[in-house]
Image 1 (cartoon, one colour):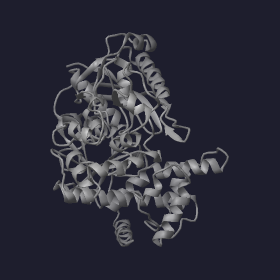
Image 2 (cartoon, rainbow, N blue to C red):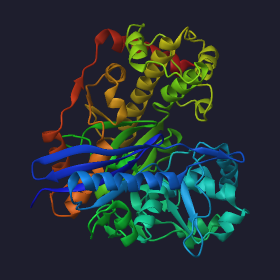
Image 3 (cartoon, rainbow, N blue to C red):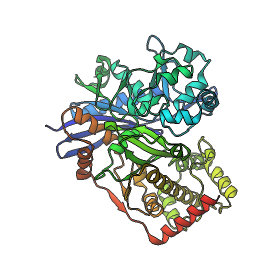
Image 4 (cartoon, rainbow, N blue to C red):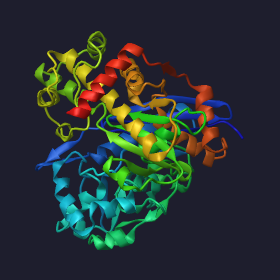
Length: 492
């Protein structure tokens, strides 16, 4: 085995980045080559992803990665779930993908459930009910010109992979979020598609993490200045699948929080949990790398803080608040003094988040945050309690032990959130790595390229042995305050 360099394209809801990762036996060095904004655009009442601008950012990032590394041994793409691009018979994109936060998707929920009830649907796909799951998005588009003309459906990472290589495929960890994949067989449920009036031809061939998709096209090599051939490898293209692979856990007994715009909280299993209790508890069974299952609950995440900051920036004429100062002041406020249900549907869409949080506090009889620091503290306390609820329920429903919680992703930078998560969960919280998704992406590529070997345990050991983490332990006083706050939420 040798040491080589791969490029991990990691797309988030607010930004994308291309990371160069030097990897080999005992080596795992990650450097940001390029970061670019991900700015959704509202057109004629619908919120869209600007996917062409994202693709330009990817090309710019690959160019920067090539300059930094000299040569790339591969590329992998991961990103968010559920949103799709529709292609016509010529392979042309039929409009920018709609954003999962657009409320139009809700129109598809009743249409789907009229044919396949929630219980039966969960028994097939194992997905937490979210009104923007791909199956509901497609149902909402039925009767429209785009879906009528569509010949293939590609999730966003697969769409970018198609533009990079010309090869069509649906990576299975992300395909599992569509609602059209059988969670038990890891194959498309064409029967479900037919029953819902969807053309099974939309469902392109599946690929597993580690499969070689193709090589970068000559036009891509010319644009980026890369020397070919450069393979594109299927990774855990759902960013959470890559992030969970990047958890530096020792053994199987752990819970994880992949914390970014969303927080994904759960445990890793060998097979899905498709019970009625799991469905009513709001748990999803998303597929992971090496035939694993991510049994988790979607929690609203740092979106609550991000949208609050955006609201305040607009109110201040474009001057962004000092987040570090807000966090420092929030840390001095009473522990778990004002909390809301972080999963409240009113928080889903863009808007005045502080006003919605105040409204939710009033509805629950909680003290209304009096200033911006109090809003920040309410958000973080509420997220920590949501993590506790999800971890405890995941353990109960799956039978998996979780004596430690690994918190990865951008939220690992937030030491106050990590402290509060430890208090609320009453477990040690291991914070980091921040770029877990890019690391998981790179590890799959490196194993396929023969730079490293081993199973998930060996890959995680490399992360554990090469990258620093922080350990946050519960504070008994704050843990008791968290328990009282949890009881208030349960009563409310």
